[in-house]
Length: 105
Image 1: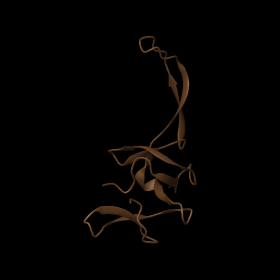
Image 2: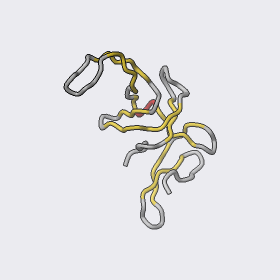
Image 3: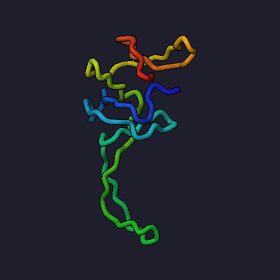
């Protein structure tokens, strides 16, 4: 179980996109994460008639390191650290370390 999952609302805490908020589109296995509309880069592509893809410049999200994002807490409106704990029914859930409230219900 990872501390950040697909669909989580995160905030960038370091780098050129610091302060940007977005939803996690994909978590990559090498410890990187793609956040929606954050860390946009331009990619020059050749046209490919086989796939009916036009050429040109496309904008896409580039991966960020997991250490550069924090889970966004809607109550405090800040990015916060996350930990794991087990509930009474032996389920493993994530919780915000500052307030102790659970992220997964």
